[in-house]
Image 1: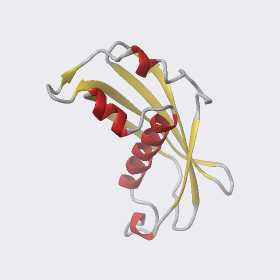
Image 2: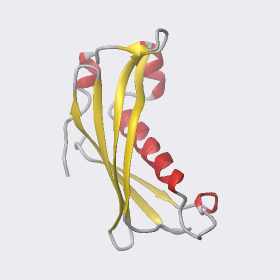
Image 3: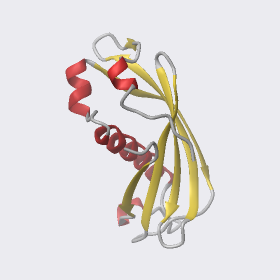
Image 4: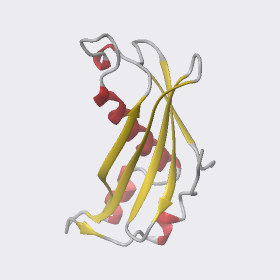
Length: 137
């Protein structure tokens, strides 16, 4: 599977704010959905992390909003793992409008790998780390 994963969606009415464009929180939801879909495509759906007893939690997000998105538009969230350390990873995103390939937002999430029972950082298992190619765009 390529290092850069593409997650496609259609803007729904519930994502539109009072100003008539996509609410900022929808972008976070899209990022999370793209990250989960990429992980599942790499063989690591949520159920597999549950069996392992450990998985990813968000430490921080950074989003730069560049253009607005509107109801009914097809959106592409491109995401990739930019780096992986002993207990964490940075995932980057480019959010684009499919019709004209306009960059709507660029973003990154810093993830930490944690033991679910203890709630503490855990070393990323080799089988998890090897499932993700480090990419760039």
